[in-house]
Length: 99
Image 1 (tube, helix red, strand yellow):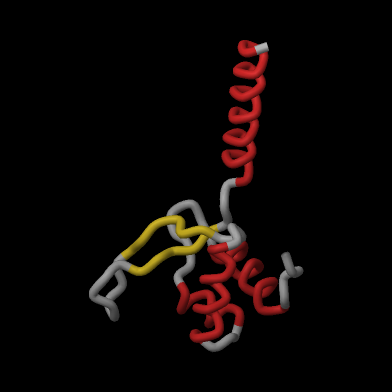
Image 2: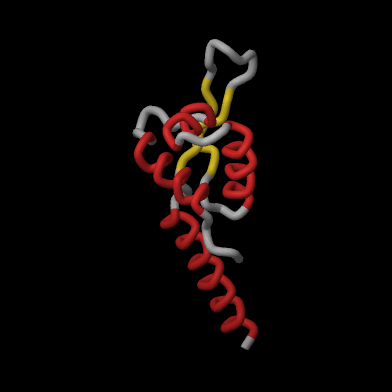
């Protein structure tokens, strides 16, 4: 996988700075905070979401859109690591049972 570019780094920093427990930033807020065009931010967020660097935390209603818009946040690393560890433990127990 390629290293993160300047746009990705700026968006990760913006997500970290703008995210709170009650509210996460939407695309327009990230673009404004990082001072980047919305089209570039949209494409970069799609790529970052695909590679697991950001995730959709929840959706919220905004006055200018009829559908709820996605709020972006950082993925929970501990939960993914716990799921991987549980899979390894389960497989090891199964292998011991077969052996």
